[in-house]
Image (cartoon, rainbow, N blue to C red; front, side):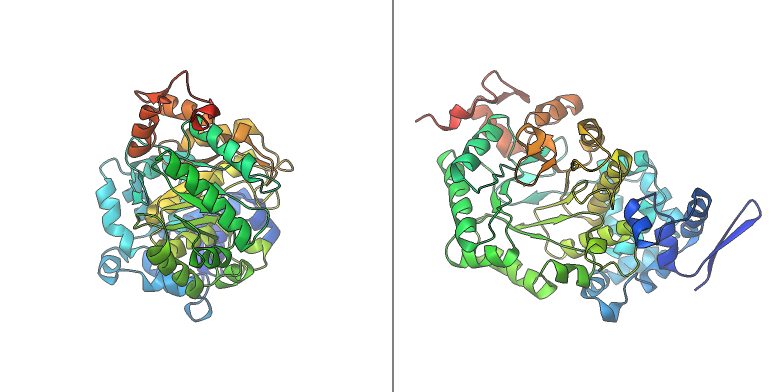
Length: 454
């Protein structure tokens, strides 16, 4: 289908919805690597102009990967509430943006149209929004979730405690866990990426984190981020897992690269509900990141923002407790520098929350990307009132995955800067431990021996 834009007498034509979506995207090295990016700023502006006039109906009828060819497309399309969709099908993407940023549009009004949206619609409106627009809208959307505690409530900002160890040494993992807890983080999850993806290692990590949670009566949840099939085998053998984790992609081919499909995720969800140790009902944890489909040659010529939105459309099927984009982890081939990382982080949290999932972020970078700690601290400050949670690692340096993220002690700064607090039940526990009082850390904070006494 021919789509055109005319600006100042200059006419630009696009061959498809997919092309318009790609060329309307802010500059990303991943799109350039894939050969789908705008060739100039002028073409990018023309694509945004054309996209603003496309109706939501056109986007619904033209998914970027065909319904019959891709199970992610089928999940997204089949989940649409047709009665809600009929009310908004005639809106243009520009009109959807105006609705979202309008000062009179409430969280409830956004929730009311959400069931009629597809991931392509969400990606499309993202491309028309400024950084400030993205933060503004994401900040007024509330999405709560409950596992052993509740996150996402207004005025709350949670953190994943990530005590990875390059040798899967349980003693080191527990020492790092104690330090993180002493800084007040861990209410989103105590989650470990294992070096060795085996049932034995997964079980050992889950048992160790379960023991420290039980011993100290901590209102949180544990997770070992091995492959979903490894976790399922461990759970069937009695391992105490609160959350079941898996990385996902926005296409069927991308998920095949991760070794998963919808049937497998359905099975994991059912197992978490019936044999997991969490109170629930939200027992799934997903990670995503712009560019993963291209890295596996599974992108179908689609831009990375649109594919990322489709990840969230898939995740929504499982009503997850947490989802996060690992925004700067994949490298400069996909997000070249701090500017691109920040933009992607804002896009991802906005798209996740508009999709209706409990969305967080790993504000991170690798050493070969043109970014530094100040970039990800800026991103954290921008998203503190928009994101449900952040990932934190010891001293901001994950020695196992070899990348940089926010540190345990960054949490206190973000709470103070934005007048936020941890999840309610976790805050009460921190007060009982005399780690926090009236929303601020005490002199006892940061002392891991609090969890070795007795």
